[in-house]
Image (cartoon, rainbow, N blue to C red; front, side):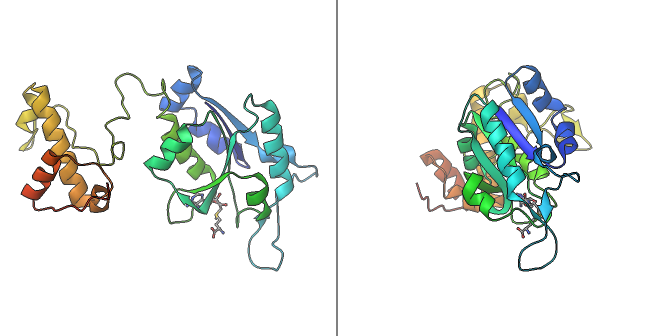
Length: 249
Ligand SMILES: C[S@@+](CC[C@H](N)C(=O)[O-])C[C@H]1O[C@@H](n2cnc3c(N)ncnc32)[C@H](O)[C@@H]1O
């Protein structure tokens, strides 16, 4: 997968993509991440990427021309002439695992990082395919949101996670929160690892994990239960712990 990240703070991105799983995936050529310095697409001595807003008001707005030139240059250099162009924006669609899966189906992405008061409105209609928010709060710039999106998408790509790491059973992968996990020691200050996990009985462990997933989801995110496919066994367990579910499925 190829991802071009357009930013006025390239070092922020370079730093973050030089570690852990993302670094490994780049080294293995599963991910080809390019950091595009927006200032390279300006034509004045001060390399200006923003200007004051028409109509007045505080802050600065990112100009359309450098963003247009940067995306155009990316398109010319990408094998895929129609990468999905995403603007990171607090007013965008809220990111969740379903949206991450949708985006991971694309082979090339361009992520635009806003700053200051955001981007000139015309950027949306002229350049952008999707606008994505990482949640109902505002951060200073689009770099951290772009990195969140990149990381969540990358770990779904084949070959990014090692064979010991799986995205299949994680929270949200099947619409539920993940079951509790334990590692050595078996006992810590009176806190025991559940016996079933020490039993070596795979079917029983699977059943326990499913049930603990259901329990945790019911306790913390009951809204998710309505959207997930539940078996008769699941419903029976939920009713045993006092939860009745109206499924949308
Ligand atoms: C300070 S914010 C601009 C906030 C904007 N004035 C507003 O009210 O929505 C600067 C940039 O940070 C990024 N950003 C801030 N919060 C975000 C969020 N929740 N999700 C995605 N991007 C966000 C966007 O790229 C945005 O252009």
